[in-house]
Length: 82
Image (cartoon, rainbow, N blue to C red; front, side, top):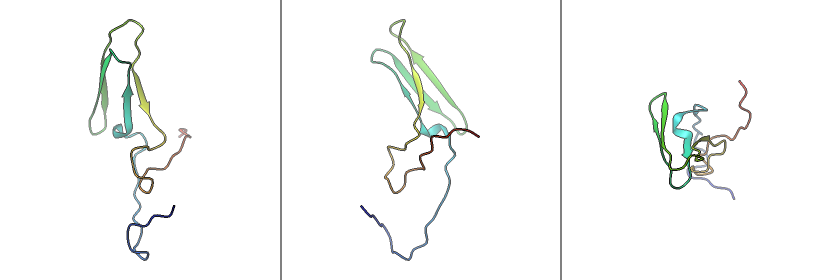
C-alpha cells in the first residue's frame, strides 16, 4: 500500500534516532512480580519486586519499532556491532 501524507513535490525531512536511546527500552516481568523502568536524558534504572524465588525481570530493546506508524518507524537493524 502506498501512503503519502503531503504534496508529492514536498521535500523529505530526514533525521536520526540514537540507537539505544532509553526511550526505546521496555521491561517485561511475570504476573505477581512488579517492575518499573525510569529513564532520564542519558540513563535508565530498573526497579523490581519479586513474589517468588524463580521470578525473572527482563530489560528488552526491540529491533523492530512496533509502536510507530510504518511511514515513521525507525530503521530495523539487527546488527549491533560497532
